[in-house]
Length: 77
Image (cartoon, rainbow, N blue to C red):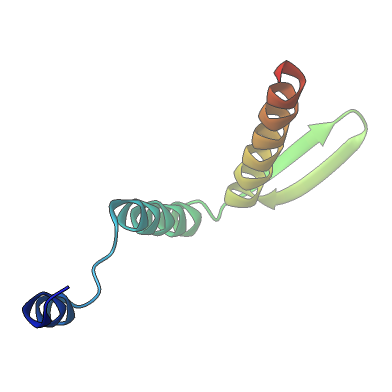
């Protein structure tokens, strides 16, 4: 690598990759979603009745869904 190439790379500095930009956008949307959905909701399952914020309920459901998908994918492999 020549000296001019090394200097050109130093001048550009750090640039985020498209994956990093996408992750930052998703994180911002998740924070906005959580802030807009702070209302409490009732969850009833059999004889349990739980009251929690809507965003927390949806986060738990997302985690359970990802876990179920991961288990099904493992069985197919």
